[in-house]
Amino acid sequence: MIPSQRHLFDIPEEVAYFNCAYMSPLSHDVFAAGDMGLRRKYNPWKLLPEDFFTESEATRAVFADMVNANADDIAIIHAASYGTAIASANIPLAAGQNIVLLDEQFPSNVYPWFEKAKDAGADIITIPRPADDIWTPLILDAITDKTGIVALPHCHWTDGGLIDLVTIGKRCREVGAALVVDATQSLGAMPFDVEAIQPDFLVAATYKWLLGPYSMGFLYVAPKWHDGRPLEEGWIQRGGSENFARLVDYRDDYQPGARRYDMGERANFALMPVAKAALDMIMGWGVENIQTTLSARNLAIADRARAMGLGSVSPDLRAGHFLGLRFPDGVPDGLAATLAANKVFVSVRGPAMRITPHVFNTDADVDKLFAVLGKEI
Image: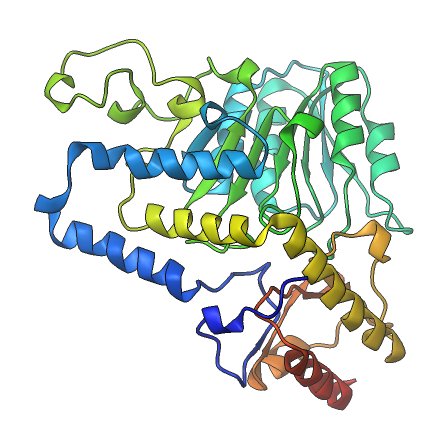
């Protein structure tokens, strides 16, 4: 269990922030890293050619450690949609095949597959929300020898409904389907092992559970796809780009591994140090410790909510860092706005009021949440 780390964040005492799945705050040290990064551009004569490579490589390596991958498997991107676009551009799909998705899945891992299916003459299979909250058996039943792509989250973004990606990954390999995972709502708060799951592509934006900046993210690319086609043909992805004096000696080869898929201007002197500092902070706490801590927090909230007549997905069927509270007659109109007016911050997504705390939350925050709820329901 990690004790409250509120002192590391600029969160006033009167604010109860349970909205990490929407946008995480930056810690003091992470914010300072961004200030340092901006100052390098403020005085550009201090920037050296090697600075275009060193920090991005160090950040790539930390992310690789987080997911049990090699640095060569990681591309630096600016959004989840960029990562899924790379996956869509490289995975073949034939007419008559299908793509498996979940009902109410986040759009960045849906729209690319709608277009992919349309272009290929393939079908979309959408798994309906299960009445018993158990997603995995329905997904397994949908994956057949006609399935070309399975595009899923690790947990559902509305209520944390958990997906058994190890079992699904095995099924995908049995039928020859590619597995594409958007783990934006889990990485950093829930362990992910690419060796166990074996996704073809794994994408995550940094501004939620990775506690980092907006407009940055990472893409894991399985080695079998390292020779694919990037979305951009920038100078820094090409072999020998470290030698600025020879950039006009155009080359056909790319930097090794998944680096060919890096976004343009990947060095990003303002945001890269923010992402690196945030990843270092998470790794210092330990992802498993974060999950244990947030699971305990949400279990306590769920127990108090149950006494008020509110339901949620069973703890064994959801990610511990997520809690979607369900109301007997649906989430009351305006409830999130009323909570915000009282400086309690949550989100409403789909059928649930989403509670997503982090290690900066306290018991006093929980008391404040229920004080407002008790007046409104």
